[in-house]
Image (cartoon, rainbow, N blue to C red; front, top):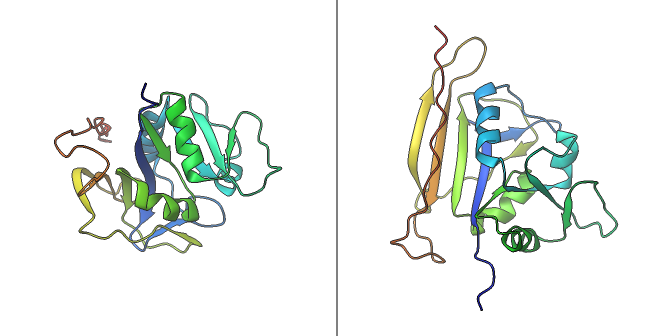
Length: 191
C-alpha cells in the first residue's frame, strides 16, 4: 500500500523590486488585491510559516491549517500544528491529504523551502523599500514564469504583477504531468 501522495510545495510571497519582503515584522506596502489573492489561493490548505511570521500575523488564519516551524521544543500555539522541520511540516500536510501546501514565510523559511519548492506564487511590487527581511534571489535557469498579470499603480497602491513560476525541471514529478494552475484573480478596474 502506498503512503500519502506528496503535495505540490508552493511558496507564496510578495516582494519589492529590491528583494525586500518585510520590515519590523510587517509588509512595507498595502496591496489589497494581493491580500485577496493570498486568501483565495491558500484557503483550505496547509500554511507553513515560522514562529515570527505567525506572531506578526497575530492569529490563526481561518479556513486553513497553520503549521508553525520552530526549534523550541516547548513552543505551543493554540490552533496551530507545531513542526520542528520543514519536512515534518510537509509530511503533516501530506498525511492530511492536502494536494498543495503553501510556504508563507518568513525569510529563513523561504530559504529552506526554495530547494524543495515546485511552484512560486509571486507578487512583484514595483517599489524600492527599506526593510529587514529579503527573499532569496531566484536562479533564472531554475524557474520559468507560466502566468503573469500586471496591475498599474492607482490610488496610492504601487504597480504590481501577479506571477506564477514553476521549477524549470522538476525531478520528483513526471515531466509530462503538468499540475493545473488556479486562475489569476480578476482585478476590477477602478474607473
